[in-house]
Image: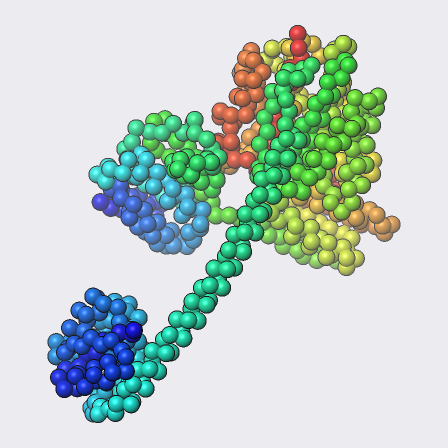
Length: 391
Length: 244
């Protein structure tokens, strides 16, 4: 049942209007002045206010002001008498749309009240429908998001399984760190034992999105199928290049470094396609060897110009392979505001400093500590692989 | 308690450990920065809010009487330095996980991960109760394209990275479709070019070299670092490169 609040000073009018409304089925609460009406508003929920203008304590205008300032959103019908008509303009400004002229006829009262209440009911109905529609859409979005998340989660698991290295199983000692920029990344490391030693491939697919990780996966497949055969590192990379080009539209630049370690001959052959050569630490010494030689990246040209380097290796020599994400990091100095970039020599300094420590300590020190990502902001997938020649 | 101290260089607050002071600081700072026409950006609000909440709830353990001190300074045109200090015993920031923790209840580390996500530099004092952070509004490189005779001259106003690589690629593509074959890149404002953007340069060459007619590819004002990168990937063989 709808509840109406009636504010009217004149006792007889108050009585007759409330009787008319009650007989029509409305619940009515009466008040003799604006203040009583205002107080009543805070104790009850009303569907409509019918108010007079001329009232003591708080007149109709003041009552309506007070209600609006307290954000009461109740529909209001004002009873205007002779002499109040000029107030209509002001009332209009306050959102009062319905007026009952005094003296009023019974059927006018009921018609007006009914009109205001049904208009309000329709508006609420429309708002409910809108809300339902939005809720349904929101549910749909949430479902889609949950599905996408599931797909991404399973891709992440698949990616991690593919890229994961079991570091205990090789003829050389391996310590390995990997951190993609997002959940999936485009860096790849593969290693296989051979009769004489092992073969390794480190690759960096341009970008760090899902497309990059798809390429990383296909490089893994390539590595599984094509290594440990009689082909040289150069032939291998040219073959990989061709496979990447055959990928069609989804072309990506890939830098790669292939390493073949022969423990019997104490030799290591490295072939690079646009990828940095490893940093070499000879047998627990602090001095380091680095090389650089220009070469082209894979996935762009029909025939790639590679760079090859062959070195002698001995027990306890270490090679540090990495992707450029390890170095492409920076931060802003909080005092000066200068951009500080990580340099290769920062890495070399760490290796020299901890040169006598075990491989795992050394790799951790390069990866964390002062050079860790809490100090240098990551901008690309990063990977670090430490290789130690056994005794 | 809410005390403010300001001059042209910085604004300094000393507050009691009440959460309501956080929004007030942000509001006042916004007004202060607006005076020098510096617009407050989302990263600033997120980071400062986390720093203050950390100080109030974790550093001072919610003890209203303990003060938090906050200093905000513009150290460069687009760089703000934010410093917050509490009276706590400090916090072992070195050993905290730097990524979002699985358990949302580990509020302190989540706050720190959020700060790390958006800050361009972070420094803790030895005790661990003072954190200084540098924040910067997100900058998206745009490029100016001019035509001079048969050359199209591209002048990016910042680094060329994955976020604008697609725009870059499609602008070039549009021009190539129209038959233009001479491209000039002024990389004076470019410090970094990532691998995706490098691919765009390489693919540009590939597409142009497919046809017989002559073409031109020039890069000027290339920094030493960038020149090294271009040499390593042999782009110096296919582009005419000159330094600043």
